[in-house]
Length: 136
Image 1 (cartoon, one colour):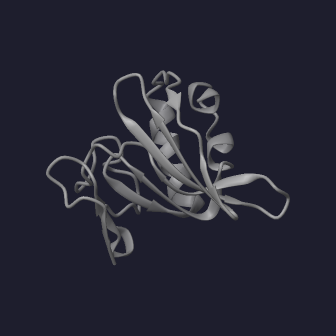
Image 2 (cartoon, rainbow, N blue to C red):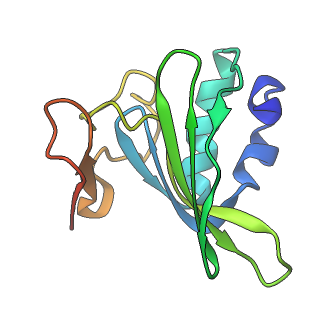
Image 3 (spheres, one colour):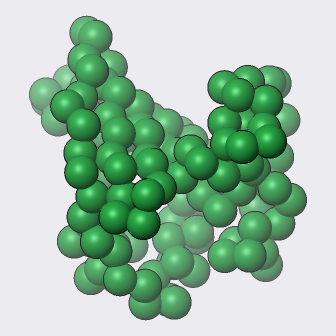
């Protein structure tokens, strides 16, 4: 939250594994380069993020499932992977599980090289979507 509000793109990208998957604004992004480009565009709009209510993480070995209910009612869900040094990095991040992926999300439209259905990964978990389905 602090990194996003400060416009710290490098700090945001550092939260992710190099080949992490981020579903943002209905677009699936893979890897640091695509995630960086999306966050550059996001922080350029200078939004203000408010902390939500974090659920206790579910941990199994080197994986953790985290979730937060946002002040606007949205829900985030992330899968973190424990690193050899004991720190955690996000492997998968879905900042809004209550929306369906769509082609060319408003926030990311025009981001060079970003395909809404990159590598055929799509998911839907919101109203009107196929719940929890991930296809390749």
